[in-house]
Amino acid sequence: MPRPARVEPSSRLNLELPERVRTRMDALRVMSEAESMTEVVRRAVAVYHVLVTAALGRGDRFILRGTDGTEREILLP
Image 1: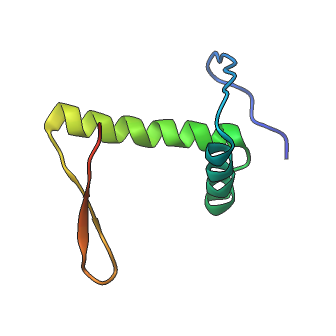
Image 2: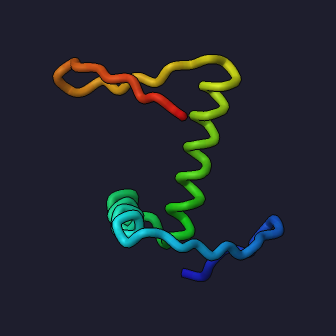
């Protein structure tokens, strides 16, 4: 399937990452069925933007609730 045409300007970004981070990114690519590492980064930035905006802008807190009912708070730096 051909890649859709870009609708906004883009720029190239080269990253030097520890191998363990690259491994985690590849695992995320597989789990999320992303088509590329670029898509993983794009999605990660979008999610992080939502979280930081909510935490800093509105003071929201993020709670993960397990299937067993246990809860833990996610703290953002």
